[in-house]
Length: 117
Image (spheres, one colour):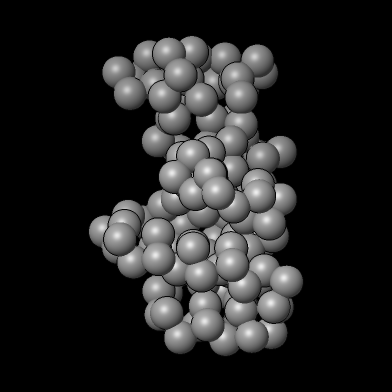
């Protein structure tokens, strides 16, 4: 992800400049990551207000730099491998990491952001 893209967004949205700058630094130091768990990101960037961080992430989605997808937490608390563009399209059952199927009706659905550029 190009630092220039984030700098341009910061100029267009000065109200989120600090969050975008911190996010840019974080992304640079985690360049090998393909997807971003917003919960982990918020922990790592705890000095940034969560709503400001969420707004910065959505700016990156609108700019085409990230894609928001959804994952399901298994009963053991890890994310199932499957990703869904629409949380309403999650099937009733999914396999966990051991290929044991679980009922998704009571499972938590979490947003994840995938890098595009």
